[in-house]
Image (cartoon, rainbow, N blue to C red; front, side):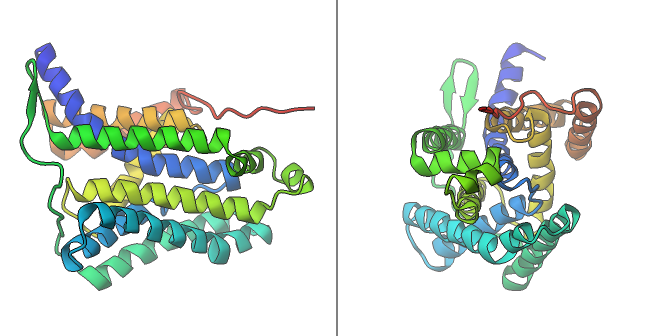
Length: 295
C-alpha cells in the first residue's frame, strides 16, 4: 500500500469518525453529570436523522432550517426525557442497574417507534454538500468530509466555551464533580442534569443530521452506531470530552482502513477486537476525565 492510498483511506474515515464522536460525546456528558451510561444515545441520533428526513423530504423545509429545527426539537426531547424518565429514578436512588436497563428499554422503544412510523424501507436525504470531490495532491476529498469535520469542530469549540466560560456550564461541571456539594451551594441538580440531557440529545441530533446526508437511514442503524460510539468512549476514556473525539476518529479511521484492506464484512468484528484489547490492557482509555478537587 502506498502512503497516498493510506492517507486517502484515513481522510475517508475522518468524517464517519467525527460522527461517531458526537454520540460518544453525549455519553460522556451524561456520565459526568449523572453517572449514567446511556445506551439509547445512538438511537436518539437515529431519531434525529428521521426527524430531519421528515422535515426535508416530507415537509419540504429548506435544509438549514430543518437542521436548526431538528436540533431544537431533539434538545427539548432530551430535556423532557430527563425530567419525566431519568431524573425521578436518580432522585429516588433506584438501583443503577435498573436505570441502565431503563436506557436499554428506551433504545428498544425508539427503534420500534421508527419501525411503526417509517417502516423498514431505507430512507435517504439529498446530500446538500455536493458530490464532486476536489483534489489535494494525490488525495481526493469529498465535500461532505470537509463540512462534517468543520461542523463537528465548531460544535466542540462552542461546547468547550459553554462549559468553561458560562455560569450554567460551570454549574453543570460542578454537578458532574460533586452533586451533594453543588446542592449545598444552591445549584439545582435536577435542572443541571436536565440541561445536560438537552445538550447531549441536541449533539446526537446533529450527528443524525450529518449522517442522513451521507448514508441511507434504517430504524436499526442505531444499534451498530451505539457499538462504535461505546468503543470510542471506552478507547478515548469514559468521561473525557477529548477522549470522545479522539476515540471516535480512531474508530472511524481504523475501521475504514481495515474494511478496505481486509474485508468490509468483518469491520464490526475488528472494532470489537480493538475494544476488547483496550478493556484488557488499558481499561481507563487513552484519556481520563479531568476532575479537580478543592479542600
